[in-house]
Amino acid sequence: MGSTTCCRLFLNRRVFYSFAIRQSQAFNCLISRQLNTISRPSSKRNLRANNWTLRNQVSLCRYISSENGVNSDLQIKGDYLEFKSNSLQLSWLWLRDHCRCDVCYNHLTNQKNFLIDPSISQSSSFTPANVELESDGQELKITWKDNHITRYDISWLKENSFSRESKLPIKQFYWTGEKMRSEDRPVVDYDDYMKTEEGLKQSLYYLLKYGFTIVQGSPATIEDTGNIAERVANIMETCFGRVWSFTSDFERADTAYSNMGIGCHTDTTYLTCPAGIQVFHCMEHDGEGGETLLVDGFQAAHKLRQDHEEDFNYLTHAIVPHEFVDKKSKDHYYSLGHVLSVAPTSRDLTHIRFNMYDLAPLSTIPQADVKQFYTAYNRLRKNLVNPSNEFWLKLKPGMVLLVDNWRILHGRSSFTGKRVVCGCYINRNDLSNAYRRHDVL
Image (cartoon, rainbow, N blue to C red; front, side):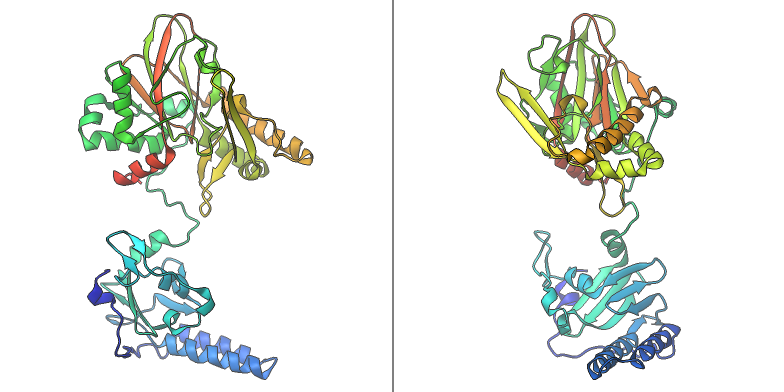
């Protein structure tokens, strides 16, 4: 697939015709529908148009074939080709635009050379002359009326066409506190993580499935914490630095720099694209408390969708502002975004942006919608802070926690004594790239 020989433009204007379908049920049904339409034309123009459509569709119905004769899995439906066995329906324009031959696609750069123009969609360039299934039904071959030939792997078509089904290769495990406590902890040994592809891939798998993973046995240093992060991707620079370290000294205008308990939240909600991963490493603590809280935001949002779908939908559309202001450093970050985000086709949850500490004045919510916003937001909050959804763990030196900041909310209990935590962020785009580079996504 993609070779110049297989997909070149045929200049001799010769089209291979296969007269396999003559009496098929699909063919007869098509003629019947078209004749019923033609029998009631509103004008001579409509009659001519219907006759033109009939001739072209009847002609094309003849040319659906396979290596072994008639192919009953393929059916022409106007401007679409349908695979009846899996309800896959593809438009001719989409198929022509997604040709991956050497003329239409640069396989060295993985970029398109060809862009379809709908204004000339009636051109012979976008009209099929012959459609075949080859390679035991695993490959679709289309010969277009301009003699251009395109081949597609059926699996590629399924993977890349529109679908309401989830396309995640790993089923995400939405967890409550009880469910998570009954699971084996998503832990990977430090040496395996740092030295083997299998160890890194296992951690990425845990991140995608559970939303967090733990690397156990690391040296308790800032440098080694940064090295753990960089096994996934480059570290994300923020106003807190590259790899930050904090204790309860209020050095920055943030509750993290205190010994107070902090409720569950996601970080960097004030950025246009919040951090993808947050890394935590407690390098020192000589007091009590300071347990880390994790909450599965997708589980809480899923519960909201089940119980109050109108509130769930509202939070996927309402634009909410967040900000970070530090008068000492003069940093002022501000962003707008949805509290909940979903995939455009499957409607799977993709992002929760929840931090009531960093909410900015609600200048984006019309006054008539204020009550609806607070109702929906608080219903989600109640799910998040429900004790049954809480998973607590005590971070210790050598135990590095990586959290999916687009899914898992984190917090902590209050503490006494000196507690030093270091960490960093990884950009969301770089995390998605790591999933694909290591064949996890």
